[in-house]
Image (tube, rainbow, N blue to C red):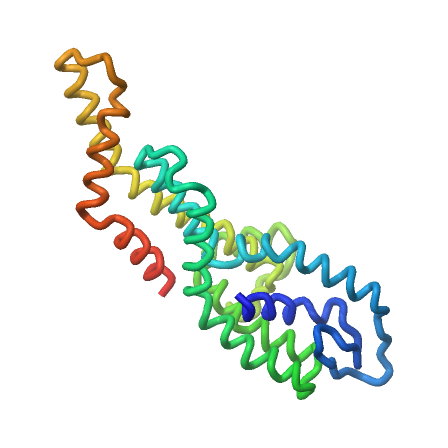
Length: 243
């Protein structure tokens, strides 16, 4: 978590850090002709970054796909609020940290540590930090979604994948992850939907109308999920889908 926060701070540092400023214990190296931001302005911009950090973690990490799939799984099981939202969000957060760890480690080693040691400037730190993040997002963003946002921004076609700007790549990644999560959720729904249909047909054929079919099918769905070790299968498949 520390490296993730430091990575986000490193990505945003050039936006509000001037040369020779001290921010979070780091001395930024820059041109002597540059101007420095005042300390109150640095605090305001840092608090703004911390405010946007939850949205960044939820949208530009594997958290988006994982939490949507877990929500679909809970709906398919018909367990209402079990597991609770806090449990699903916590599981999705730790799985996201596990998946994104190679990227954050690379950003921390190649960008944050040299910046902290004063070996590179803020601009170079931004370039080093954005490269692995760009590669990760590009791996999962669909070409169709990238083309859509390039057209919406009226930007010229990039010369290659590495030339796609983050301003178009980030929303394209979000759309691609939503589509992938909905596809996985639809597949998860199918076996439980079959159980619901079978139970509803049986209960109606025998004239048992005292209990809703959903209540009758719930134990069978839970039993099937437990017998196939469902949590292991779902979580393992989700993590492997990012490799």
